[in-house]
Amino acid sequence: MRIPLFALVAALSASACFARSVGINAPVTVLPGQTVQTSIMVSDDVTGIAGGSINISAENEPEYLTITTEAGAFLAEAFRGDPIPPHGVSFVFLSHDMNGPGELLKVKVTAAAKEPKVDQVLPLHISGVLKPAQGTDPLPGVEFQDSSAILLGGVIGDADGDGKVTVKDVTKLLKTVLGLDTMTAAQRYYADVYPATGTGTLHGGDGKISVADATYVLKAVAGLLTLPAPKQ
Image (cartoon, rainbow, N blue to C red; front, side):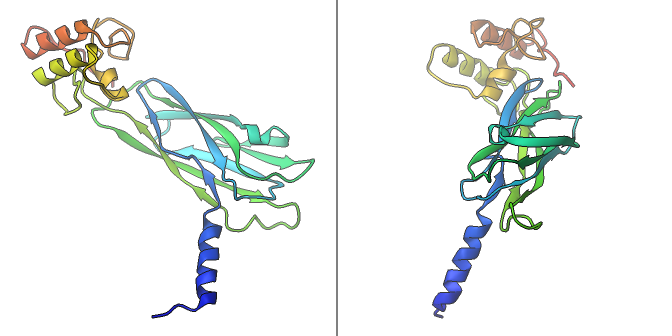
């Protein structure tokens, strides 16, 4: 079936319209007890912004994470009114309209002091409105896109990420120390176990991977000691 040209043009225009977006470019990954910073951005095809508001909220807050925000670089020329709960801001550009791309909000995501066995995917809801200089209606076709924060989980001593502690983890640790293998941030965090009274993670460790960690895990596998308990 042939599609009329005018229908094709209309469809393409509609899809281009919905491409105009405000949101976080990628999911936020964070280790237990740590803080990462990200930004809510307005895309480069959003133009003629005279003011508006932007807000972000998180599910399971503060059980698994907390959020703080501050105005981004895009709002440097804006007059800002009172903050909008839970983590938003309203703004008006006084001198001239603004065009994307730009950073609306700096967002800090702080994970709770908990070490879950599996990743916790926590939705981040982004909402707001962008307004033009003329009229009271919002700028058309701007989509506010939700994102997510991932609290990285794992098993203490599990260096290869298979959910259990075995001799394979000892091998993984030794290869990593020798530069023959690599580990993800989550693997390094949960395999950092020596010393047990250290402060490198919530469960101990010294913030680095070494032969001492491999030795500690090997002794745990052999039943000669007990690995630190996860922080709950």
